[in-house]
Image (cartoon, rainbow, N blue to C red; front, side):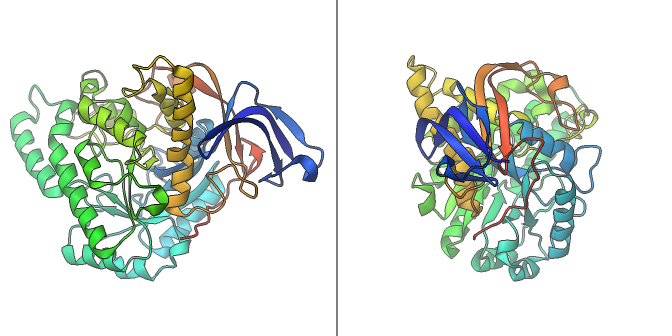
Length: 446
């Protein structure tokens, strides 16, 4: 089926343009001449964006069926305008070999509602095998420089030097200094474990600003030494911003990611939400949150990705020291960022129409264009002739987040009760309306 998306405001490559889009055999085409009996979809009053590419998700498949699987989480992603995802390796078994990568590809091919790719996980023992794999087979190498769910910590200097000096593939690093975290954890457990005061407000004190900055500094210095392509995941402090540049993303070897959660919440929210916003690295102060907004707007932060990481509500309701870190968030990430024209840097302005003219292209660059460029994703992330018609069509209007509206297998969100001011009218995946399309494996060019 061919389609015409009519009368929408197309947000693409820095501009907002009122125009029609033409889809033929799943691809964007220049004009209607090649269309056969097209179906017209009206996008009047809507913003038409490239489908979001979320390069940091934990769909927990295989190995954690109580938390999530590829079917449930990909449906939640699609409902939120996310059309492509890159899944992390800390599943069970961990995705650390080519054979295990192929097994995950089979799982996604059978279950996924969105396009998919995978990272391979680095360990202290598998670097030679990783370096031997064709780099076009997968999205990136995931490197944990701080322990998190699955505990894939890499902490041997010679292993890190070998990886950074020889990798032909982008390295995506979770940066938290393990020695600082463990020292803080011991001290706070001695003071609070099982006592009054043991709660999630301890999290940014244990996984503190120092732990993040020290680890990110070391990773960036190593990448500079070896001229390695490095992408630092989920930065959470304003101090880390000084380690990155605001050059155009095509000119950078070292790039940075932020999550909507670190832009939305701060340490004042632990009092109400507790372990529901416990994640690694920790959500920190309001000053850090405002600093991250600034980094996003001035080009120091390059991508927005969710780190979607579901756990069951029962796990989250445990005492603080036992509850796992991670937040489910992919279903509303685009809408969360659409709220951003009320962000701290813009909310004092009264010219909201002008702010939206600036803000929408920024969202698209961080959630669609830049992920495609940094990860070398072929023919996606832009609205261009010859590219796949992955589209998110948003309309103004209120949507309240309720448990019944959530598609996550875990069934909860820290956003419950929040009112969002945009909603998805339609999503197109590979040129077809959501629910009628077939997901594809992503192809990588570098």
